[in-house]
Amino acid sequence: MKPKIAALIVLGVVSLVCPLVEMALTGKVDPFGPYGLADAFLSLPAIFWWYHVYKTQRNYHAGPLMNAGVVAVSIVALPVYFVRSRGWKSGAIATVLALLVFAVTLGLAEVGERLGGLLR
Image 1: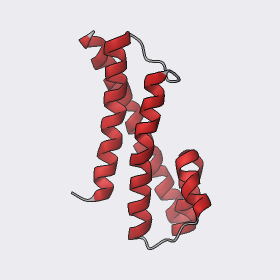
Image 2 (image 1 turned 90 degrees about the horizontal axis):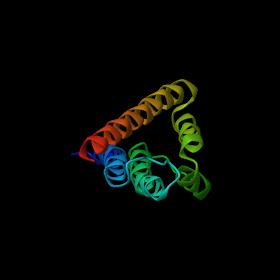
Image 3 (image 1 turned 135 degrees about the vertical axis):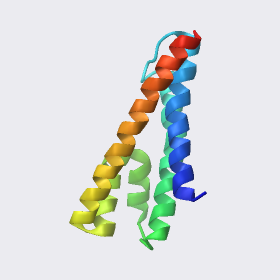
């Protein structure tokens, strides 16, 4: 399996499992509670792993600020990276695809929440 795909699968699993466990154990999902923080901290390595593999494949040499930005504020730093590494047109397309991945993770979180509710 390609590392980029593996990173996205890990991100999807985290997005599904964290709300499922929280709902099954507590009966509610609080995005700013301990489970939400765990979800965020487990998602960050998967996002950075995907970014690192992707920039290596594209032979893009990002500086420390860009690397830190991907960890700290992915929603802002990734579109900047896409435009800088691909140009405006391809960068915009990559940003739209990244937003679709984000939407899928939100959908998986909803499914996890509902499955957790059924397990409760």
